[in-house]
Image (tube, rainbow, N blue to C red; front, side, top):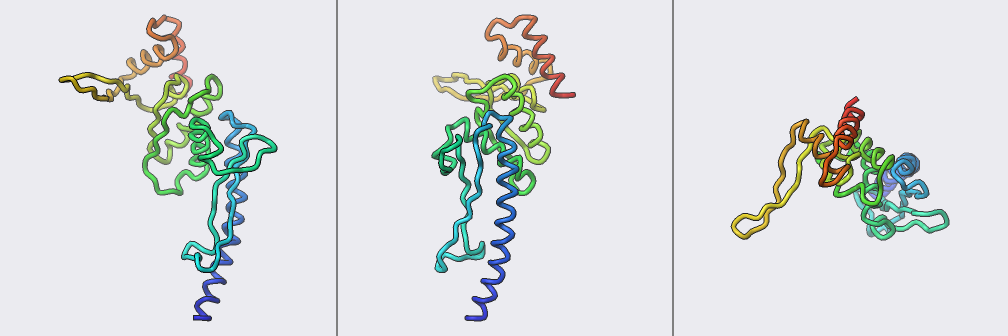
Length: 208
């Protein structure tokens, strides 16, 4: 038993050193991704906490917690407690970008990741979603024309009432329908020629 414990501790110590090195690199990489998505004051931390011997496992002698300090001077806290819904989605986007291709997950879903942002920030979010989609399938629910324009394909989500029951349906859009829908997102119910031109420009820019 003593020999087995000694071998375990040696292997776990090597794992701890590798984990510490990877955590510092991950902190820097995720924090770099936060500025363009309107989280420029936030800092990401991968905190490694030692476990008591009775809690050691095949994963090693410590546990890892992801923390965020949303503003300078604030102590870091758990992601779910410190960040709002929109901020949490953007934090997860930054995290997934850094870990892209390593998680083994085939599909990622982002729900209104653009909440509370627009313009250049929304465009930056769209660009990052597009990058992420090179390694995994990405589904994004959005009201942002900038984010929508970055997609390779679009589904329009709507509700219908049939036999007294309300149901949600998703309809795939053609290229022309994509442009019209993005124009509607830009202009509202009354779609102008200027909105159509802006939608065409957004789609062209994202496809270049």
